[in-house]
Image 1 (cartoon, rainbow, N blue to C red):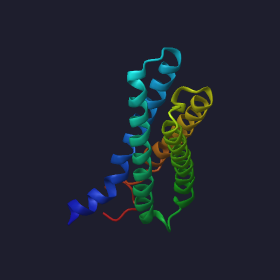
Image 2 (cartoon, one colour):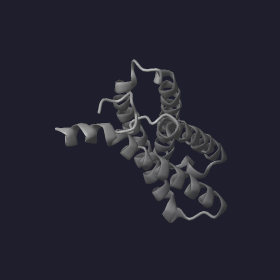
Image 3 (tube, rainbow, N blue to C red):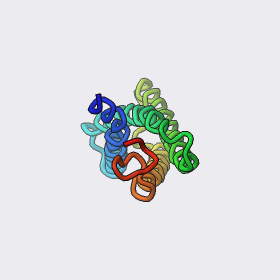
Image 4 (cartoon, rainbow, N blue to C red):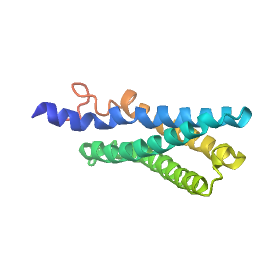
Length: 154
């Protein structure tokens, strides 16, 4: 039962790396396509955005689950800050994905439009802040570091 319990606790730190990688690569390719259009890569940026946004949603859900053991601890406020940044990132990328999906349905993919690039850049900046606050939780406070953190049951 420890393996299952530990796996559930570890889902958030495992899942957070997918939206980070996928959304950053989608944004980077979108900027490259703005400079040098290559229709063959346009669909790739869309797939990366879609899967990255889905994985951001999954990371938000697993983050909520990971938050429960700390609900009544002094770290609650610090975790809530990270959680709020993460919800903002996820919400922004959901909106961006819906916008892009609608534009693709109209045969006018917004993926290389200047406004889209500005919004995705803001999204990457928010994603960076979310990642930094999450890193602070692990490296500064030892959140979910079993064997070290006195707030977790051993």
